[in-house]
Length: 634
Image (cartoon, rainbow, N blue to C red):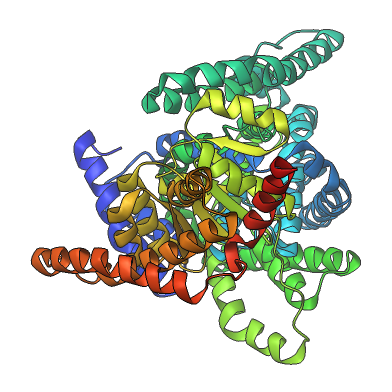
């Protein structure tokens, strides 16, 4: 690291804010920007950071957070529905790729033990880079995204048996030296299973995973509810980090992948009404740490090794990408993906992954590989990761346009957002709107900041989540970008205007319907040009006024006709006076004139419509009130 911590932080931030936006704007993608920034400040360029290994270990927590957030999006039943792709597509990819690369490594002269480690390590792809690219392209829920995620998840799971296998692959000539000091995996040495018999290790596995399931079901919900009830956001954020770190530490106890533990914890909380709040709290940490991770990968490229054998490294990078691409596109064909999706899927996963660095290091400590083997392979993996965004750019510019001409357009993947409506604020107003929409088959996602209200509402089968409704990250996590409509039903006009502004800027395609708190708020909504609004208590007040008129001797028909005329006049006055609201003198004069006009309009309407039955919006109410009146008369 740089000698001065503040200088190091300044260097990180400066290079990132300059290179990442440039890379994004040029079409290369944010990942390339981070990688380039890492190369620039790394030990082989400006030399501002001389220990990229430390940065890499720290930033790997970004991958852990990413897997946790992905787990939050996966209901257990959805994970079960992915089993064919998870086992068939993902399992086949790991086995076939490892076999081909391992045989190739053995054929060029590596011992079979080292060739096996190389094949298994290079079969894995970069979870961080692939998911980042799929997220940027918005295809995580499309066919390519689901298939890619299935393969990545299986690869992360496969790390467990690979780590367990490597100690048995120690080279005979290195076995003694490995046993003398660094022969055992540091993960195992620091875990709670070192030296335990097999039956006890299995029992600990069952105990930890079973305990996590029980805790997720019976302990985390009331604990999360209690913390949410305090209303202290930073405590909820700390609790979110506690969940991730706790799950990672449990996996460390079992000598397993931290990322796998975080993913498992996320899946356990996927059905929780607090998952969007958790996602919103952790997303900034994930973004920062993932950016740092990509920068550390750029720093870790050993250009001295590359300079020593540039043609050999280039050949290894090309061979790795070609072999993995061929395996992936063949499997995608077997699983009947479309041609464009097959090519994109194969390009996305054709690089080496971050776990390769871990497995190579473990192989060194176990005596299964030598530094002469590992050093060029580390550079190969890092360069293949850098190559992926460039290949995606080639796909976008050269391949996809031609495929779109030749192929019939497929059905767009709408995920579960085709009939989604978000209702913000589930008080008395929001309840009625949500029940009406739910009865028509719309998927209503309710968000409220009151934990007690959430606990009450979810008993009736509604999908309700905890969170502060004016937070952009929470709205994004809840799917506002792809929702059909956003209903703002809160009773705070200032916060309502803030949400309208956020939605207009960030979700322009989502229709906006708002509860107006008073006339001034209604003016603001008219100016904002929302798709629709309804004034709080206005129509219920009209209905009560009608009942008062009936109680004072008016017929039901006459009372509803008066109400209808009043509503027409008031709606016209509202929209006309909104144009004058910033001119106090003109506004006051218009309101006074409208009061006088109201009496004349209603009198004329009453005379012209005398004896007629009511129509329009009040007809049903009139029918009901007339029946009730008839029953009273009889």
